[in-house]
Amino acid sequence: MPPGSAARSLSVIGLGRVGLPLALCFADRGLRVLGIDHDPAILESLRDGRMPFAEAGTQELLHRVRASGRLELSDHAADAARADDIVITIGTPSFSHVESDLRQVRAAVDDLLPLLRPGHGLILRSTIAPGTTDFVAGYLEKRRGLRAGHEVYVAHAPERIAAGRFLTEIRTLPCIVGGVGSASTEHAAALFSVFGAPIVRTTPVQAELAKIWTNILRYASFALPNLLMMDCESYDANVFEVIDLINRDYPRGGIAMPGMTAGTCLRKDFAFSEERSHAPGMLLAVSRVNEGVPLFLVEGIKRRIGQLASRKVAVLGLTFKRDTDDERDSLSPKLIRLLERELADVAVCDPLAPTPTQMLPDAVRDADVVIVATNHSTFETREARRSIVELAAADCLLVDPWNSLGTGQVFLFAAESPALAPFAASIDAS
Ligand SMILES: NC(=O)c1ccc[n+]([C@@H]2O[C@H](COP(=O)([O-])OP(=O)(O)OC[C@H]3O[C@@H](n4cnc5c(N)ncnc54)[C@H](O)[C@@H]3O)[C@@H](O)[C@H]2O)c1
Image (cartoon, rainbow, N blue to C red; front, side):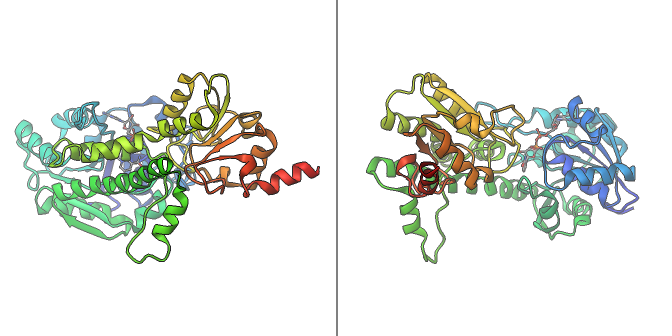
């Protein structure tokens, strides 16, 4: 039975934002899938037929897969050994030291160790530091005498799909596969070929580096406009105008827009490279710039309106990026904590976040400051702009590093914004 054939079974350990959509997609392609997670809330949600988080199209997919009977659930990592192939999609955070925290992967591999048998495929889908796939292969050989590429197949097939695009990109994004030995690569390639995306074969360490550096590239690319935004403030220049000057009709690439750059992957994955970096400090500086955006915004507000004690500040957006319900590693809570340390009265609105927040009109009513912390599309609407103009204080300061409100300035008093003038005029006329 070749890997990926419908008669073969597969387990996925870790039913988070990476593992669950992947498990559903494998089951939808006809494989028998055992989904494993030790979080009872996730299993309960799935048994009730509810996705535990939002990912476009997956609720419908979950219904279809449940009806097919091809998805089983378990809370024991060791049960994964019942299947022919095992895909690991559990968390790989970084320690507060600059070091990858492999405890979750080690725990799952230790649970599987006594149960692994010849023919098993073990695929690491989680993001891992360079050398981790070879470490896992060496660990299996040392502890069980199972040689990767001979008795068992060990490979890294990193996940690079963006949140919200899983069902599209699983079919289109080139799937990098790096096996320990060519037999491992071919085994994992056959398994992932069920999705129809191009398979790119490489070594384990190159697959690990490619994934980490995909994220480093994005994290560093966003630090540049964030640093430019801070420089522009020192020179009393407009960052959006400078970005337009850089990018307009320039044929050799361009600069991204500033924003509150964060999220689980971007914030931690650079550390997996940094732990053995040849340029210690370079990526830490990138991180410091992105991490510095909340304080930069608070300081900019204070320069314009003075002390924040007992001033109402509305923070729009809690999730780490646009139009997601994922709050993990967002910079909004850090921004809120900094505002609270200034003794401001903070109101929060995020219609997508699982954490309960206020409705937009309640959050912005009588606000002295409105900050667009996450560029959700709902904050770009005419209704959002109208609510702010109608309900916030007349001298309200708008803070919008994303330019979601279309004011064309990071800091601007609402009354001075031509983009908001039509709403103000309609209030005056009524
Ligand atoms: N979220 C993303 O968009 C994304 C994108 C690319 C790569 N990644 C990487 O993929 C991996 C998983 O990310 P995620 O966002 O899905 O994480 P997650 O925290 O949402 O999911 C991991 C799941 O694994 C479960 N788990 C952990 N240890 C377990 C064990 N021993 N037995 C059973 N279940 C266990 C947890 O309960 C959790 O539900 C990480 O390495 C991450 O860096 C994530």
